[in-house]
Length: 279
Image 1 (tube, rainbow, N blue to C red):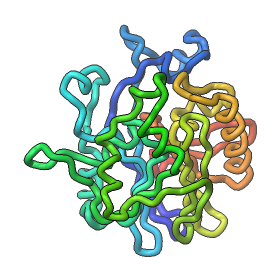
Image 2: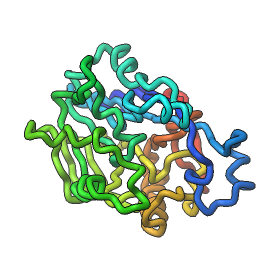
Image 3: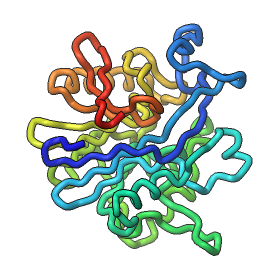
């Protein structure tokens, strides 16, 4: 769709399943399963939603998904499908990986940053987007390198450490930043120390990629959050702030794990209206 000067393409960079308890934390299953039915293993359907944007001749990729580096056993555990979805989508748009200018992941968990790197034909690691600038919060990078015991399983060093090999493709941020005209990054924390939301602007119009601040449509309820959130109260505060702006200014929201209708608008009273052009 076209949003002012922004050309937006919503892509699935992979589909998978996640534990329902992980996705909804203290929310009782009797409530969340009405919206996200679980299978016999308590797993629910998830997507890795990627936004590709063209703005002022630049190509921006936000979120890279799980990628292709998971072992066969791990891929089966999470029922991974379409791991090459992002690159196939770029190919359909006529964009080569080396033509991507900016890459932004909301944080460095394996299901968001896995696509930053891939295996070459010899089994070695290589960057997926070799000419792109990658914007990451310094707090996220430092924590991902040395996570606490609870968070260790969420990070895979092979996903992101090749970025910092002296090629100057990674730029570390310390809070909110406008990394190029119309491309704003907001540090929200909460889920992880360096979680961030991407806000693309064109005049009065805006699109926000929420990451795991609002992973799926049921999380549009402020008190509903993930068990993996490190600071739940901060998540609630940042969600409330984002929702107030999104409703007041009619921002397009992109929910990073919603498999059905991941893009839409918050209406009065918190009602979710999907954007048909990006459904």
